[in-house]
Length: 360
Image (cartoon, rainbow, N blue to C red; front, side, top):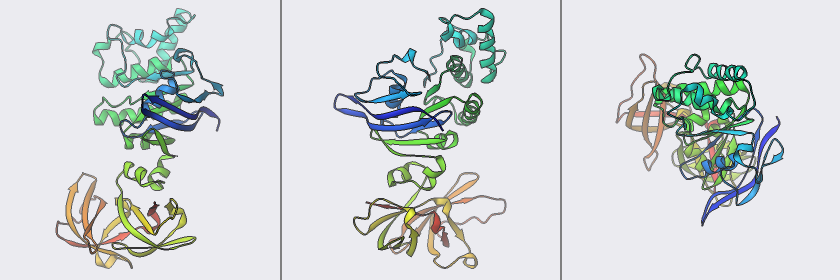
């Protein structure tokens, strides 16, 4: 893979606030890369630094091995799709899409070909003359994408472009954006606070908190092997269980009130062992409710305290251990499946290989 965007120890301060604090990233050619984090974490500021709309307080940015220090936004090989689309309401679809071509020295025929090609690419063929005011939210999103893509940037920057869409259309556009990125082969950098969106669409995700990048990894690695409790709690649902480290060699011996004694690989544990406390993380779908006949050695006893039905999945709250700590357990629903009732005593099997441990 060839590195296309290189962020070198970039910081951006607004007064006393460090919006971006010493971030370094490498983003490859043709990659769908997401900046994910809660509001105020610095992800949009970082995107604007890449676009050139903000100047870094320190650090450097290279695109295609060329320094971007002092390079204006319109001279960078980037284009940006904004959260509010920025569609011109007094122009039709064709005029909006062609807006960036107005200073290009191209013939009318070539211009029309470019417009028609990009409209076909985003699924808007034949809508050239439609008024911007007559477009749906999804169509406006496609017009904004077409207007950015017609200039053939090396990097397309997307600032939460799907946030204004309803859930069903948002999910549809996620798939369309991913398909579009693969079709054009352009590097996409997406800013989002939606974990599911980042996991669904991305090749790599950078999780940000307080202006810093906490972890950069593939969606699967982020979900299955988060390197900090903060990332684990932000990416999907996670149970956290207090434990004590009894032995620390190639394998880590742990004891906890809920899980009892167990041993996990050192590769499943993140952080430096400075004391014997450990937080054990386990995803709800890695815990299964079983009948007594199906339980294995080390099964946990518990009592269901709550159940929430979500169509394909039911989430159960199960009180376990001496302190009645609550675990969240998810079960895929199937026809004729047994429904567990609140107050029912159950057995839980835990997938030990999927546990992750976090040390202070």
